[in-house]
Image (tube, rainbow, N blue to C red; front, side, top):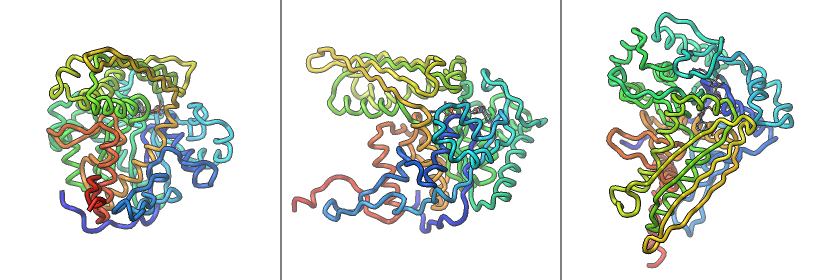
Length: 437
Ligand SMILES: NC(=O)c1ccc[n+]([C@@H]2O[C@H](COP(=O)([O-])OP(=O)(O)OC[C@H]3O[C@@H](n4cnc5c(N)ncnc54)[C@H](O)[C@@H]3O)[C@@H](O)[C@H]2O)c1
């Protein structure tokens, strides 16, 4: 990939379009609206709070990321979205029950004005949901055209100069790449023929790519992770990224597993279970949707531990992931991990994690960062899969044939080095020999 020569400035308003206006989407919107008014801090957002070291450690140059790269300002964001329910963002936030009245009341008016556009929804891809606020179309190609026209109309009426889209919709049933996904031509034919291998989220993604709108996929669905979408994204000069926000349990897994491997400690088993009571939990209670999530959550460990290189330490690990729908907890998920590890001479040990987290509170800052970084990537002329954003994903997309990087700290280094590279700063290798000359 060649280094872009020019990065366009972030001028004008940025439409942030969210298919799926549920818990994550409304928590994100509310947080940005509150932060804009100085009524809350965007905790967890690298773009808002993170810094980046530049040059030698002796120079003490560590600007804020937002001051180092030309990101859109939060005040220039205009929110839009689609949902199968007609509730506006305020009503949806109240139903999601993530944020307290003290946070929702001051922004009630602004949130109430954000109303979802009718969704592309075929229930066979999300079996636990039933909604009436949906588009009608004879073919999937018609539905793509309707979403394209929604995007154009939204941008025109809200006077936006640019748009990005972050999928915050429910997890769809497990689908694998089929011949229809192999080329742009096959996919467009499939849209006309209503091919069942084309899901709801793929219809939104295709419409976005056609409109030149960068797309991030917060769920584990295929959505933009197939050859036709990679090709279209590159052809249209659109950055894409996915899949599945890395928020709680997998975040911890991709911190701990590299630590165990770094010290050459063995692992015999890793059992991860969760209780979750929000609508996402209800959707994941369907085995079809759970399978999509399970595949996404299982991938990280093998790729980090590399049993092929260290068979005596990591071959035949028993790795199991469960998610149990348990309504009393709502969005306040609890994730347990039990790790059976071993050390010197094979002596066994155990490690337990109990993460009492809040799903949407962890996901909201990721939505903000992805929207801002994808918009920046597009203005920098980057197209196709943005592997430098792996930091945010449970199942990061990477070039065909390339093993994705899961280690959180390598991902962070890669993200920051990409920003340095784009801005013409020296890359940081941490070699540090110059300090001892
Ligand atoms: N919160 C986290 O920590 C986290 C982490 C990783 C991934 N995710 C994923 O993010 C997504 C959103 O999570 P959530 O907690 O907000 O779920 P949610 O159920 O509260 O919201 C999802 C919304 O999507 C809507 N929807 C479903 N299909 C749609 C379609 N075709 N078009 C438009 N809207 C549609 C639903 O009606 C619902 O309002 C889920 O896929 C979830 O698995 C969340």
